[in-house]
Amino acid sequence: MGKIRRRFLALTGTLLGGSYLIGANAYEGLIAAGGEKEPAKKESLLFPERRREISIDAIDGIRLHAAFVPADGEDGKKKRSYCLLLHDDTASLAQCAPYARHYQEKGMDILAADLRGHGESGGKYRGYGYDDRLDVLTWIHWILKRDPEARIVIHGLGVGAAAALYALPEHIPTGVYAVIADSSYTTLSEYLLRLLKYRQNSRIPARIRLFVLRYVTKLRAGYDIKDADVMRAVSRAQTPVLFLHGDADRTVPVEMSRQLYARAQCTRDISIFPGAGHLEEYSLHPSRYREAVDAFLEKHSPDRL
Image (cartoon, rainbow, N blue to C red; front, top):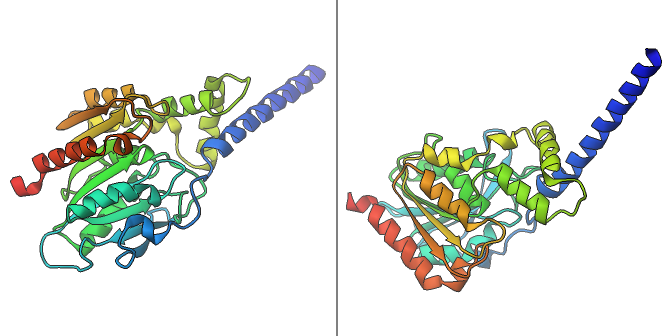
């Protein structure tokens, strides 16, 4: 029995070690911090002379970075509108520049944030929006602290859209009156499964790698991939949401936004852009994109209440 037991323990150790290596490789490729680490050029958000670099601490102590650009360079006494911009995975706040331009033209102040593990924000892993949801609330409270009567729109791109939607059930302040969710995924499990299938070459089935990745992520990043469910978040949301998506998106299928729209219980709308790949809607259909956003914000503006 001793010999058999030793062989069993050796085999078990080999399997566990091999499984961990599989998960560790997937973790390094998909979860470990891999966003743009070069500081974004100030010109990227327009009006570089107005831009201010903002740093705050997340609730877990991670240092977060954002760029704040007042609409007119002054902190007037009137009620002000703000747009909190959130970029996609493996990007930085510089990705938000075209969208910032539109909101600046509308006279809104801009706060473009680097997600944790991206740009100039701290963090050794990517939260895919789920572990960024409380950071979103931290930035909202930063706005409200300096302007208690602020009217806030959150505009998220890809993973940034998921972050915004995850934040909605988390006691979102009433100052947030609308969310623009551009190309969000439905569940992190489904999204990572697609990435494992199409972006990482391996003979090991993607579902097995995802299974092991879940436990490595819990061990090293502290969150559970299975808990990251945007569908559940939108079913509890009350803030109005506009879903945007390109019907040629191969990274996040357009069907995911349709599913989110169907599950959401809040006031919502959806706009699909023909021929647009992942986050290509604005570049391919700029007028229609702006019109959809403007119409939604006008419909739900606090000024109309």
